[in-house]
Length: 497
Image 1 (cartoon, rainbow, N blue to C red):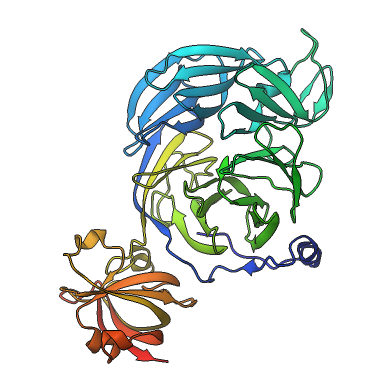
Image 2: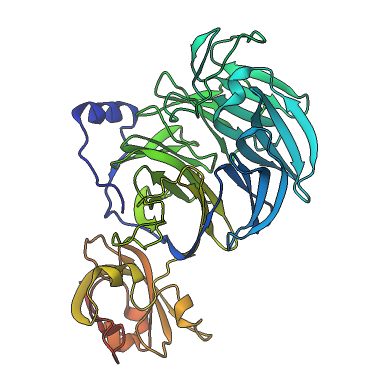
């Protein structure tokens, strides 16, 4: 379930008015477009992975293991089945990055950070690049420049016997020259034999530099001291421009399009990189853990502490879309999610995959590999989520208001019913009707946003010929919830408003 919305405080309102005067506050029932929903889910228990990366072709996932005896494990990206194991783990992996036909593994080997390069084809190691600065033994954020030359890394906060408390620092590794440069942060040269880094895992991502790579080729870095987003051109070490934010981000996706979603406790902001301004601010209760953006840059996905629901945002409109349920019990709380006794996964890593669309995550601090295959506008006769919220064998009269966007005469047979991207009103339809359903809070089919339905006779539904159907209509229908011998939706009618 999505964390409950909470009211904004006066200080937040004032700050948002200064930094993002045009940014509207989005509520959960705002108008939406098409959304992703879960078609199937897979859960694979593993021995704690630090990070995962999707291989070219999106058919395999490689995980870097923290507790397993193997360093890298390859999984099927659809079933979650273990395919191959490679390497003897002698280090503490931090993150994985895909660079063309190579996988880069940033790791801590005996308190000496280094980058190892593996060929995608056979996972054979070809290069090792030592990282001189000991602060990189724990990584808080990482991103690859779009020209595949630079790896941007931010170190996690740590401590040492020589320097005491060490704040996060920002580094850039040049893969051609193998030089690692300090970009932002205090310059501290370690003394061999005297520094003793804290062996604990990194603290939460607040107060660490967050990094993202934009489709335009720019690298985006959030300032840990002020509400600023620094934009670096591809080969630059100084920011070319600054974008003011309403808060200091704690979570940013590794990659984004022209809209960058950033999040902190209770807030998500959408940043238009072309216009250099915040366009939307979303108030949502909870602490974000991780995020990712779809490959076309149109959707953002956030996980929150204590929740199995993935918050889904339309980046083009700033709308909150229905959550993606990543629980094993499909949102019900009568069963526990595992024998370990936890009810929530606390998803710490999210990755997007195409063909088919999937979300791949790590839950339970890396002990569960999670794969959710998604479908867009999966609205068969009755929405599965609402079946679970309503008692079966009910007959319910429903209404909603929508704008008719398009009528299309079908020229080919429809796909099987379970693959329809819309509501099948009649068994042998001849018309596809595209509707923009206006906001409402009813738990019925035809949720707000762009929806499709399939009907046999336009005249029967609209009481008008197809060329006269346009504008806003009040729709009514009878919803048969698991009533034996009855269609899911019947008596579907539209009244011109």
